[in-house]
Length: 230
Ligand code: SAH
Image (cartoon, rainbow, N blue to C red; front, side, top):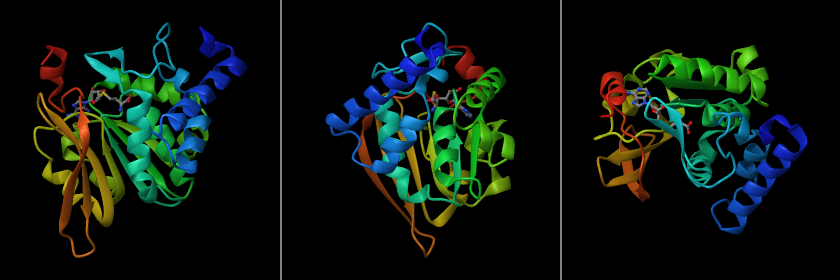
């Protein structure tokens, strides 16, 4: 319930961010700023601990990622989330990272979430409306769409930053195609054993891929497979 009591919730959110700094997960000032601005409690289901550093169930066999994973992805994408840039968040779930992206790219930029569970799209929009990212949503620089994220979202391509919040068996080609030269994608790849891969599109259009760390995400799959429990 603490997320209904504005002041103390915001304070606890700040403490969570400070802890991530102390543990060395966050070194970037911009990531500190955005994670302090977007209160995580507004994005977790009622009754779920908001500030504990682990993933939490959000229904539909999906989870909100742990704060340290959100921080890691924001930090890997920081250079590609500057004001005016375009960001795509695939498997946007609760909308937490989409809200962070919109805050970083500002009103001249564009942050797009794509999520294949329509109920999560609807609840993420409600979450965002309560958050500090309500104004980009209203102003149109942030939007969340129902769709199969494996196809990306061609309408606002190419993207400076693409984040994928679910593990793909392999990197979907449409996402590589929709990355701008100079752009970066962060995507968990694998089935049981997964790596968080960092895909940089070079200015000549070639791509460089490296593995950042071992991770565990829910799969990037069809809606049917997900609702059946994979
Ligand atoms: N990053 C989000 C959610 C992570 S869980 C957060 O932290 O809140 C991964 C999300 O990917 C789930 O919401 C799931 O429904 C979604 N997903 C899985 N496969 C998908 C696909 N093919 N297209 C769009 N969304 C997908």
